[in-house]
Amino acid sequence: MQQYDERVDAYIAKSPDFAKPILIHIREMVHRVAPELSEAMKWGFPFFDYKGPVCQMAAFKRHCAFGFWREKMLHDPKGYLKVDGEESSAGSFGQILSISDLPPEEVLIDFIRQAIAINEKGVKVEKKPATPKPELTMPADFDKLLRGNLAAMDNFEKFAPSKKREYLEWFAEAKSDATREKRIEQALEWIAEGKSRNWKYQN
Image (cartoon, rainbow, N blue to C red; front, top):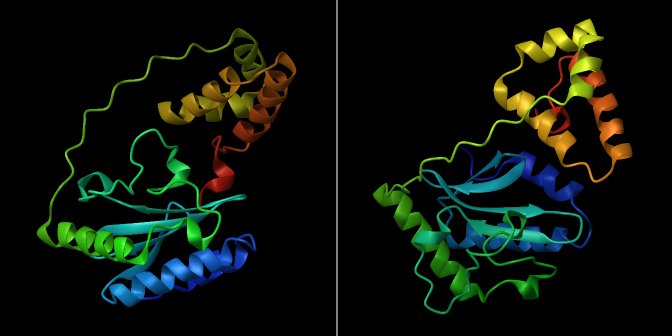
């Protein structure tokens, strides 16, 4: 893989104005510290890889994030890493609104080198067995409307269980009856076209 990826350039260019200098700073620092790292786009975000993911960055509407793939394995005596109690979009250091919100550069350099060494040794993260999710029942009103739309019913029956669940969870999360009815109406249209709940975010 190439050290730089044009898709990362495009990602930065499309990011909010406040985020651009933050992302550029992180990118330049990572490559300066570890020229052996290559860039890639994964799950829609820029990653820096060396024998596997090392770290990643992201821009959102109001904040940026910078994180390490194996953050729980890093030695962090001063407690810079926020690996517990933070939402995933906040990365390893919480929400970043400016370059000054990042830890000192010498700290980041140490983390980068630690992460590379972990990948170099081929250390694997022990995965906990996934807890099966409880089954969601088919809402009666959605089932009735689905049966009245042959294209949607045919496609829904062909969907994998995970795709079906995405729609059912979407309905269940609605805060009001009006929102729920609107979601069901939209879902029928998408399902009739063979689209999953999150089709907009899939390549």
